[in-house]
Structure formats: C-alpha cells, structure tokens
Length: 559
Image (tube, rainbow, N blue to C red; front, side, top):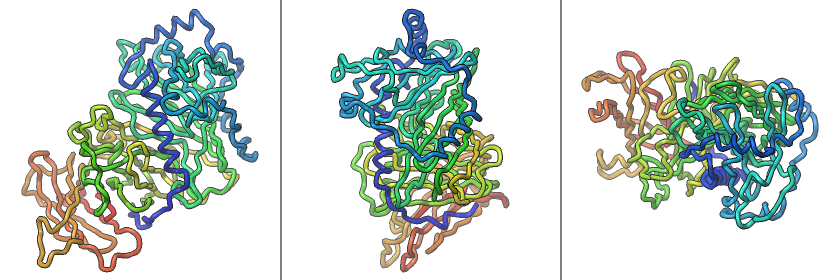
C-alpha cells in the first residue's frame, strides 16, 4: 500500500459544506419530528393493515404497470438519459412549502396509521417535500403482479398549524422515504426504522441497537475540487415488496446529474450487522475529473486529542468528544492502515491512499464508551461505522481519498471518504461496479478485515513535558498511540519491534510498553519537525512487529 504522498490542500467548494450540512440537519429533524417510526421506538404494523383494509391507499390509486423493473432495464433507461442533455428538475414546489422554516417543516408529521406494509417484516413511510427538500422523487412499489406509482396524498400527513387546511395534488410527489423492519422474530409486527433515502443520493443505515450516524451516497462528483462539488440526485425509486418472510428488501434507483446518469440496485438486509449489496451502472455525459465511488460522509468535530492540530482553537464544550466517526481504515493485502480524523486546519485537506487491489475501506467509530462522549441524546457511542468491500473485478487502480473540512459545528458533515479511480472518466464510457456495505461497531468482522492489533487512540502533546530540553524546543511533539486487539503479546517483556517513518523531519526515540489495564500496548514517539517546514503536509507512520511478524495496523497521521 503506497502512502498518502500526494496529500495536499483543497479549496472548499462554494456550496459543498452547506449542502452536506443541510442534508444532514434535515434528516435529523425529519426523523426526530415524525411519529410512528423512530429509531428508538416501535410501531405495530397491524394498525397500518387495519387502515389499508378500510380505505383506499395512495399506492392503489396509482397507475399499474404490467412489468416490474429489472436492473438491466433500468440501466438501459439510464443510458438513454445520459445520451440527452441534462435537464435540471423543475422548480414546482409551492411557495408556502418552500418558505417553511425549520419548526414549521418539522411540524409536518406522517400519520403512523398510514404506514405502507411491505411483506410481513418491512414497512415504508415517505417524507413530505418542503423547506430544504424541494426536489421531487417518484416512488413505485412493485411485486410480481406489477408496479404501482405511490402517488402523493395529503391525507397521509398531518401538515401542522402553518399548512392546516392546505391540499396538494398527487403530482407533488415526495422528498424521500424510510424503511422499517421487524428485528425481533418473536414480534414481527413491531417495526423499527433502519434505512433512509433523503436528499441528493444520500442514504443512511444502521444495525440493530445502533442509532443513525454517518451517511453513504450513490456517487460523489468532484469533491473538494476548485470547480465545486456536484450532487446528482436519485430521482426515481422502485421498492420491491419482499415475498414471504424474506429478510432483505430490494430497492432500485435512477440517478441523474449534470455529469452522469446511473442505475442502482440495493439489496438491503437489516440485522447485526445490516448489509447492503450495491450494483450500479454509470453513464458519464462528460469527462469527470474526480469520481468518488462508494462515498461515505461523516462528522468529526473534536476527539481524544482535543481540538486536533497544534494551535487549533479549542471547543468550549462539556463533552469530551463529539464525532460520528473517528478514523479511516484502508485494507490492502497484508496491510491495514488507520488514519485518525482531524479537525481544526485553516483549510480543507485531501489525503490520498493509493492501493491495488483494494480489499476494503471504511469510516469507523472505534470509541464505543459512553464516558468518552457523555451525550445522553446523541449516543455517539452507538453510531455505526460503514465498511465498503469491492466485489467482482473490484474498483481497479486508484486511491481512497479522505476529504477533511474545517468545522465548528456538529450539524456539518465535514468528512468524506471515497475511492477515486486513477483512469480518466470519459464521456460516453460506461462503468459497472458492485460492492458491499456493512454496518460495524468498533470493528468489521474478520471476514471483512483480517484481525490485527488496532489503533484505539492517538494523543499528541508537547514533548517538553516528559522529555525536557535546555533550552526548550516547543516545536517538538510527543505522539502516544495505543494498540489493542488480537495478536499482541501478553508478556510485558516481549521483544516489540517498532517501525517509524516521517516524510520530513524525524520520528525518534520510540518506546513501547504493555498496558496492563487494557491488555494492549502503547507506543511513545517524538516528532522533531524539519527546518524549514516543507510545502504541504508531513506524513507520519508507525506499526509494531513481534517475532518477525507485523502484529498491528499501520498508524498514519499528518503532523
């Protein structure tokens, strides 16, 4: 695995940060303000079935199409769409919906009794359009008998006091939808929400007993580049009703944007973990400088090493840490790299991790203790990581890119990780990809990432505190890295070999010791910066070996 030797600073796009923040904030608000299907609550689907028996649902009023969509048919549709000039969606949202403030939009509540059953274990609720969510998506429900448009119906919602008495036509459509599942086989009618599609190509998923955290996306286009990031939209969805007691649900989606169109199939299996098998066919309309495959978007405000970089402004916050993810993992044959996330830079940074073949990557939330966060409502310790596993022929040559945006608010998703192909993305040259997504807790399973001692914390401080010099040298920094997990020796006298490197300056005087309180090992190393400091960033690396065998991940950080 090559290192991030091309780490550089990238200019923030004009609308990228705000768009991610708006998508994230609206999802949080919609989930918190909707009755019936909440992350922490249960909903008895028998209520919805009773309503369905006594009234005509919106789905049944939609026109029935004789032939269910297939992935290949959808790919052909996306290819035809890409052969035409891009047509932005029309601005047809009624003014009173577009003008809704946060509170008025959150007052719109889906009526829980109108929940749409999808077989015995799944159910669906749509999101209303309005405020930040102006774009319309079409939702169709399909079974072997045919396809039905799920037409908008104002009677499915309590529109709140601001919109009381308003009526909107079936053409209004929806902003997105959420899916719930009966995790408890002994109570299959008690559904818990676990999946949301809402905004651009964003979707969020959680495993059983987790809460929503980071997001996945269908695609990322030119993230962090000077010309600005592009956000293609999922415009049409087909939700396949699971048969029998199926434990997975299939969702098809059509993507459209200025630079490309695409077809997606998501086979989603909720559980512990929840998994998504993704298949996509992409059709570029024009050359794309940086196409992010399997993108993940998260939030990192501050962590165990305080505000992050030396000299960064600290956060005046009662909580010790605030983040949805605390590090990036990149898995290559025989090596796994951990990059702790950082906030507090003066400008956004793009770091690239070249690897071929890529076995997997993910944004993880390794810190799982409540005491590390002390936030009763946010439950950061229960937020999932997401692990990406390429399938088939893989993603080819390229690099996992990490984009870190300076942020002072937890409402902003300021972290993006995606695989960017090395080969140019040319207009008219289609791409086919398959990959898996899996929710994880502290770590992915051994089947996804071979076990190694993992980095569980990175702390940084002045080297003068423990190793004073005369005269003092405030530029010296002490890195303290904790490793835990399988493969680490239990003998505190074990001969541990330390490998260190720095792209400039030097990591010196390493010392490794066993930590009896955790059963892990701790590495101390001092960084002596170069004089003068080179252009760009300085990349540091470390890992431990025992008995001639590498026993830990590779720690990777930017000084």
